[in-house]
Length: 86
Image 1 (cartoon, one colour):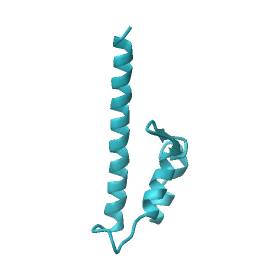
Image 2: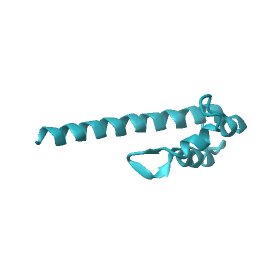
Image 3: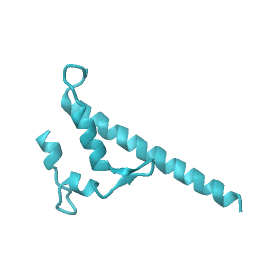
């Protein structure tokens, strides 16, 4: 858990979670990506989860990546529909 929280961005030198406070998903524009990660981590319950924490973190990040791809596709698709209507 400590490695996830203290991980530093190689480009900015800031902690990755700090950098992710500046980003949101289009479908959840009121919540930063960092908050989504922290929320998921606080829901981890080793008694209920079939995976250990490292696998849970990986799955959490993959879920966020999937959401970002879906949001990007939907936004691109909506933009094309709007463009086609003119």
